[in-house]
Each structure stands twice: as C-alpha cells, then as structure tokens.
Length: 130
Image 1 (cartoon, rainbow, N blue to C red):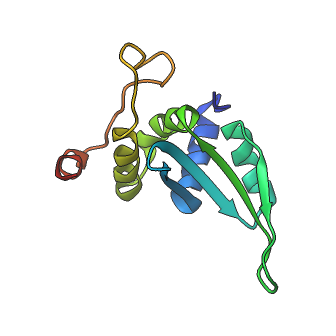
Image 2 (image 1 turned 45 degrees about the horizontal axis):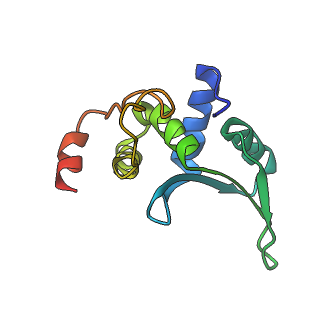
C-alpha cells in the first residue's frame, strides 16, 4: 500500500511525521496520518511515500498557502506500524492508542495489515491506563 521501499525513506518520513505530523482517528474509526506544511516539495515527497495526492489550502493574506498529504484506513495503519518503533514517547503513545481501536479481522493480522505492533519500552503502563 505505501511506497516506503527502503530504510532511508522510512527514517526521513519518521522525522517529518514526528515534527509536523498529525495522527488521529477519522470519524473515531479510521486511522489517519496528515502532514500539513508551507513547503510543497516536502509534502510532495510525503504524499509520494503515502501513495496519495497533495492538497492545497489557500489562506487569507498574509498567511501562506499550505499543502497537505494524508492517508487513512488500512494504508495508514500499515504505515503507523512501520514507523512506531522509531517514534518518540508521545507520538508512540498516540499511535498505540489509534491502532488499539482498529478492528482487524481474525486471520488477517499479518496479511493485509502489516506485522504485529511493536511498542517501545515504557508504553505498557500508558496503554494499560487507557
């Protein structure tokens, strides 16, 4: 689903999402990742790795136009599983929270939805409280 083919792209995407990304549930049901910036080239590369398109939002002057790349649903869940081991504590907790509500059909844990979730150290206590 995603176009992340090597560690270099993965680590670059992790850095962008860690700094500028938004991870949430669309309609309280579907995992979603959004990156919004004024830099079209950066957002374009994110969209390419997401396998999606770039959207332009025109803002009132003096604000600059913003560009957004987003992915949601199973494709977002797959990317979240890939980036989870590399994220900081706050974003890792958010990813674990989002993935915990994803309804994965029995028998499809690894086929369409990527590998099992790997939580960084220290998240067991956070996840248990939620």
